[in-house]
Length: 476
Ligand SMILES: *Cc1c(COP(=O)(O)O)cnc(C)c1O
Image: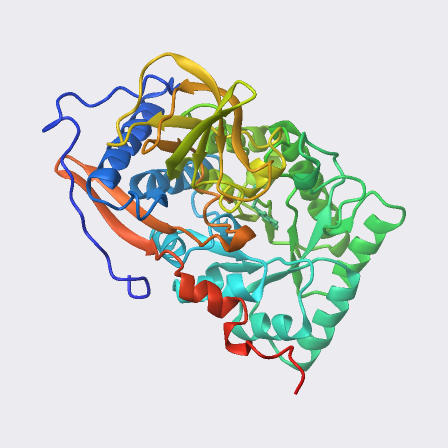
């Protein structure tokens, strides 16, 4: 691990040793041994984070990542697809970098045999900084510039064209310079929406891919492949959080059928690899990882058995399901107050780290656990209260009217399941700084923390806000 910041170690006593029995996370629900183990590791880490000063009055907001949890999700993903494919089937799991764009995370996943799905020059640079190999990288953005396409083809990374205009650009590049990049086309099976419109990628009018059911589209796609013997992959990503598993599987079935049709028409196995995208939904209401990769892989095999007979290589692009359960936000309660009879805890976590939850609370509810000033889970009667963030607008609330043990100044609001699309996705409202992110390993001899990302400094905030161009708008 060469590229990440220097590890910082801080050890803390196990809650089961010096502090008596380990606290029972009774206020969380977990029905599986796996979920319970993850909850216990998290509780150890929260205690240790407070005890070692990783969080406290001067660092009232941090993100934590459970290294063992990430590893176990990676292993579960490998096992799930190994169980439904014949030995020797090429399967590449490419992590959707947008879910946790952090170099050490990409490096850890790389160590676990997971590649990277990238969708911007920045994401590609992160994957390269993490040492992800070109043959384990897939580029999927809907708005690739000529320069991005040239770079990708020069590196030999896989590219999925989004639309006919992009395919025409790739035609020109392929004609002028040979490339080792595996090339494909993204199609939209138009299977319909899930419960979250903004994340439903396969509606009739989705902006992604070639809309397969539109008039003439299917014929166009088949012809596009026949005209391009080098076009060998098909790609779809038919949903994310909120799309039912069966609907996603239906999208994959449609794409497999299309591959069979193209291959039959071509009279050879032109399409050798199908990229089924990501989108496994995450359970945000308990510590259990349900549904699991094994459930989805089994359903896919039932729905499209021919995709798993060994004739096709497979690519997956899971994001949220690999990271979400393994991230935790610790937000110190600065003040408490009451308004209109409603208790309010003013914390340091709001829209800057939980943007989706704050702007679309009905779609993105998060579990919040109350911990005391020493990081211990609070008990006591549940009181309906608001958990507010630090930003200056009234809607900056992590939880509204949530029943929790009464939060007090100096306590911590522990925000669960925030490893994907939360603290890694900073939103700079009110110039609130990006929090530090630590990885943790919880073991028999305590909890070890490593720096994944430093907290943003106030000087960096000024620099990023044009600090070097102070007089730029003044008259000469
Ligand atoms: C966002 C995205 C993914 C990952 O989706 P998750 O719901 O996080 O698994 C995969 N592929 C593409 C093309 C995406 O845009």
